[in-house]
Length: 223
Image (cartoon, rainbow, N blue to C red; front, side, top):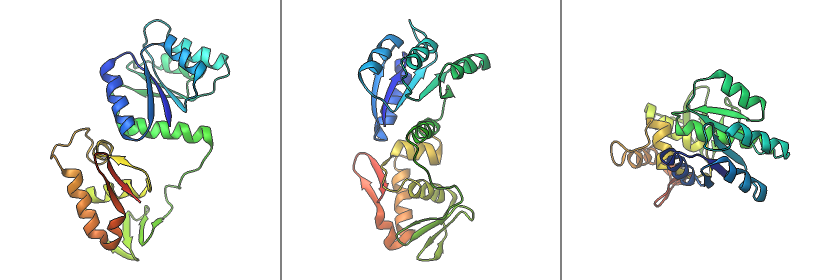
Protein backbone atom coordinates (compact mmCIF):
# COMPACT_ATOMS: atom_id res chain seq x y z
CA UNK A 1 0.00 0.00 0.00
CA UNK A 2 0.99 3.59 -0.67
CA UNK A 3 0.04 5.64 2.40
CA UNK A 4 -0.09 9.37 3.11
CA UNK A 5 0.50 10.05 6.81
CA UNK A 6 -0.67 13.45 8.05
CA UNK A 7 0.65 13.83 11.60
CA UNK A 8 2.29 16.84 13.26
CA UNK A 9 3.58 15.02 16.36
CA UNK A 10 7.02 13.81 15.28
CA UNK A 11 7.30 11.01 17.86
CA UNK A 12 3.99 9.47 16.77
CA UNK A 13 4.76 10.00 13.09
CA UNK A 14 8.17 8.33 13.42
CA UNK A 15 6.66 5.32 15.21
CA UNK A 16 4.00 4.88 12.51
CA UNK A 17 6.37 5.51 9.62
CA UNK A 18 9.02 3.04 10.81
CA UNK A 19 6.45 0.37 11.63
CA UNK A 20 4.64 0.60 8.29
CA UNK A 21 7.86 0.65 6.30
CA UNK A 22 8.95 -2.48 8.15
CA UNK A 23 5.70 -4.05 6.90
CA UNK A 24 6.68 -3.20 3.32
CA UNK A 25 4.33 -0.22 2.89
CA UNK A 26 5.33 3.01 1.16
CA UNK A 27 4.76 6.01 3.46
CA UNK A 28 4.80 9.72 2.63
CA UNK A 29 4.67 11.96 5.71
CA UNK A 30 3.46 15.56 5.95
CA UNK A 31 2.83 17.66 9.06
CA UNK A 32 -0.24 19.72 8.16
CA UNK A 33 -3.44 19.76 6.11
CA UNK A 34 -2.22 22.24 3.50
CA UNK A 35 0.69 20.01 2.53
CA UNK A 36 -1.59 16.97 2.54
CA UNK A 37 -4.03 18.57 0.09
CA UNK A 38 -1.12 19.49 -2.17
CA UNK A 39 0.15 15.89 -2.23
CA UNK A 40 -3.36 14.56 -2.87
CA UNK A 41 -3.69 16.76 -5.97
CA UNK A 42 -0.55 15.37 -7.58
CA UNK A 43 -0.24 11.79 -6.32
CA UNK A 44 -2.42 8.75 -5.74
CA UNK A 45 -2.55 7.02 -2.36
CA UNK A 46 -4.28 3.87 -1.19
CA UNK A 47 -5.09 5.20 2.30
CA UNK A 48 -4.69 8.52 4.14
CA UNK A 49 -3.90 8.43 7.87
CA UNK A 50 -5.12 11.78 9.15
CA UNK A 51 -4.53 13.05 12.68
CA UNK A 52 -7.64 14.75 14.04
CA UNK A 53 -5.76 17.65 15.67
CA UNK A 54 -3.65 19.43 13.04
CA UNK A 55 -2.17 22.94 12.92
CA UNK A 56 -3.68 25.31 10.37
CA UNK A 57 -6.36 23.64 8.27
CA UNK A 58 -8.32 21.19 10.43
CA UNK A 59 -8.51 17.52 9.57
CA UNK A 60 -12.27 17.90 9.13
CA UNK A 61 -11.68 20.55 6.47
CA UNK A 62 -9.01 18.42 4.78
CA UNK A 63 -11.50 15.58 4.54
CA UNK A 64 -14.24 17.90 3.25
CA UNK A 65 -12.00 19.30 0.53
CA UNK A 66 -10.93 15.81 -0.50
CA UNK A 67 -14.52 14.68 -0.96
CA UNK A 68 -15.49 17.94 -2.69
CA UNK A 69 -12.76 17.18 -5.25
CA UNK A 70 -14.24 13.68 -5.71
CA UNK A 71 -11.18 12.13 -4.08
CA UNK A 72 -12.42 8.80 -2.72
CA UNK A 73 -9.17 7.67 -1.05
CA UNK A 74 -10.07 5.99 2.27
CA UNK A 75 -9.32 8.12 5.34
CA UNK A 76 -8.35 6.68 8.72
CA UNK A 77 -8.48 9.38 11.40
CA UNK A 78 -6.32 9.19 14.52
CA UNK A 79 -7.67 10.93 17.59
CA UNK A 80 -6.59 11.49 21.17
CA UNK A 81 -10.04 12.87 21.97
CA UNK A 82 -12.72 10.74 23.56
CA UNK A 83 -15.52 12.68 21.92
CA UNK A 84 -18.35 10.95 20.12
CA UNK A 85 -19.38 14.24 18.52
CA UNK A 86 -15.94 14.66 16.92
CA UNK A 87 -15.96 11.11 15.56
CA UNK A 88 -19.51 11.40 14.23
CA UNK A 89 -18.69 14.72 12.55
CA UNK A 90 -15.65 13.20 10.87
CA UNK A 91 -17.52 10.14 9.64
CA UNK A 92 -20.35 12.26 8.27
CA UNK A 93 -18.07 14.45 6.17
CA UNK A 94 -16.17 11.53 4.64
CA UNK A 95 -13.78 9.79 7.05
CA UNK A 96 -13.94 6.01 6.72
CA UNK A 97 -12.65 4.89 10.11
CA UNK A 98 -11.34 6.13 13.46
CA UNK A 99 -8.56 4.85 15.69
CA UNK A 100 -8.07 6.36 19.17
CA UNK A 101 -4.61 7.10 20.58
CA UNK A 102 -2.78 5.30 22.08
CA UNK A 103 -3.36 2.42 19.69
CA UNK A 104 -2.02 -1.06 19.10
CA UNK A 105 0.16 -1.16 15.97
CA UNK A 106 -1.31 -4.50 14.92
CA UNK A 107 -4.77 -2.92 14.96
CA UNK A 108 -3.55 0.00 12.85
CA UNK A 109 -2.22 -2.41 10.21
CA UNK A 110 -5.43 -4.46 10.31
CA UNK A 111 -7.59 -1.35 9.84
CA UNK A 112 -5.45 -0.14 6.93
CA UNK A 113 -5.73 -3.54 5.27
CA UNK A 114 -9.50 -3.57 5.80
CA UNK A 115 -9.89 -0.12 4.23
CA UNK A 116 -7.76 -1.18 1.29
CA UNK A 117 -9.74 -4.40 0.79
CA UNK A 118 -12.98 -2.44 0.89
CA UNK A 119 -11.71 -0.11 -1.81
CA UNK A 120 -10.22 -2.65 -4.23
CA UNK A 121 -12.88 -5.24 -3.55
CA UNK A 122 -10.81 -8.39 -3.02
CA UNK A 123 -11.97 -11.02 -0.59
CA UNK A 124 -10.32 -12.70 2.36
CA UNK A 125 -10.29 -16.17 3.79
CA UNK A 126 -13.34 -16.80 6.02
CA UNK A 127 -12.41 -17.02 9.69
CA UNK A 128 -13.65 -20.62 10.01
CA UNK A 129 -12.13 -21.99 6.78
CA UNK A 130 -9.30 -24.52 7.01
CA UNK A 131 -6.07 -23.06 5.61
CA UNK A 132 -3.81 -25.52 3.79
CA UNK A 133 -0.22 -24.82 2.73
CA UNK A 134 1.82 -27.69 1.27
CA UNK A 135 1.61 -30.45 3.90
CA UNK A 136 0.64 -28.00 6.63
CA UNK A 137 -2.96 -27.17 7.54
CA UNK A 138 -4.70 -25.11 10.23
CA UNK A 139 -8.26 -25.65 11.44
CA UNK A 140 -9.35 -22.37 13.13
CA UNK A 141 -12.43 -23.98 14.67
CA UNK A 142 -10.35 -26.57 16.52
CA UNK A 143 -7.29 -24.27 16.84
CA UNK A 144 -5.27 -27.23 15.62
CA UNK A 145 -2.31 -27.48 13.25
CA UNK A 146 -1.63 -30.62 11.21
CA UNK A 147 1.41 -31.81 9.28
CA UNK A 148 0.50 -34.42 6.67
CA UNK A 149 -2.76 -35.00 8.52
CA UNK A 150 -1.16 -35.52 11.93
CA UNK A 151 -1.87 -33.02 14.75
CA UNK A 152 1.08 -31.00 16.05
CA UNK A 153 1.31 -30.16 19.76
CA UNK A 154 1.98 -26.41 20.11
CA UNK A 155 2.17 -24.10 23.10
CA UNK A 156 -0.17 -21.09 23.09
CA UNK A 157 2.55 -18.70 21.87
CA UNK A 158 3.78 -21.16 19.25
CA UNK A 159 0.20 -21.46 18.00
CA UNK A 160 -0.28 -17.68 17.87
CA UNK A 161 2.93 -17.30 15.90
CA UNK A 162 2.00 -20.15 13.53
CA UNK A 163 -1.46 -18.64 12.96
CA UNK A 164 0.10 -15.26 12.13
CA UNK A 165 2.42 -16.89 9.60
CA UNK A 166 -0.17 -19.09 7.88
CA UNK A 167 -2.67 -16.22 7.61
CA UNK A 168 0.01 -14.17 5.85
CA UNK A 169 1.43 -16.71 3.38
CA UNK A 170 3.97 -15.07 1.08
CA UNK A 171 4.04 -11.84 3.07
CA UNK A 172 7.06 -10.54 4.97
CA UNK A 173 6.38 -10.06 8.68
CA UNK A 174 8.75 -7.80 10.58
CA UNK A 175 9.98 -8.80 14.03
CA UNK A 176 8.17 -5.73 15.38
CA UNK A 177 4.84 -6.91 14.03
CA UNK A 178 5.38 -10.45 15.29
CA UNK A 179 6.27 -9.14 18.75
CA UNK A 180 3.21 -6.91 18.82
CA UNK A 181 0.83 -9.59 17.58
CA UNK A 182 2.07 -12.46 19.74
CA UNK A 183 3.64 -10.85 22.80
CA UNK A 184 1.87 -7.46 22.81
CA UNK A 185 5.04 -5.38 22.72
CA UNK A 186 7.03 -3.35 20.18
CA UNK A 187 10.45 -4.26 21.63
CA UNK A 188 11.93 -7.68 22.29
CA UNK A 189 12.06 -8.22 26.08
CA UNK A 190 14.15 -11.37 25.66
CA UNK A 191 16.46 -10.17 22.85
CA UNK A 192 15.84 -13.13 20.52
CA UNK A 193 12.44 -14.51 21.57
CA UNK A 194 11.05 -14.34 18.02
CA UNK A 195 14.02 -16.28 16.61
CA UNK A 196 13.71 -18.90 19.36
CA UNK A 197 10.02 -19.50 18.65
CA UNK A 198 10.58 -19.60 14.89
CA UNK A 199 13.18 -22.30 15.53
CA UNK A 200 10.68 -24.27 17.62
CA UNK A 201 8.05 -24.11 14.87
CA UNK A 202 10.53 -25.23 12.22
CA UNK A 203 11.45 -28.23 14.36
CA UNK A 204 7.85 -29.20 15.14
CA UNK A 205 6.72 -28.78 11.52
CA UNK A 206 9.52 -31.05 10.28
CA UNK A 207 10.15 -30.77 6.51
CA UNK A 208 7.31 -28.23 6.26
CA UNK A 209 9.25 -25.95 8.60
CA UNK A 210 11.61 -25.17 5.72
CA UNK A 211 8.84 -22.98 4.30
CA UNK A 212 9.47 -20.44 7.10
CA UNK A 213 12.08 -18.22 5.47
CA UNK A 214 14.39 -15.83 7.32
CA UNK A 215 14.55 -12.36 5.75
CA UNK A 216 17.87 -11.04 6.98
CA UNK A 217 17.42 -7.72 8.75
CA UNK A 218 13.68 -7.72 8.07
CA UNK A 219 11.83 -10.64 9.66
CA UNK A 220 10.21 -13.85 8.45
CA UNK A 221 7.90 -15.11 5.72
CA UNK A 222 5.99 -18.34 5.15
CA UNK A 223 6.79 -19.09 1.50
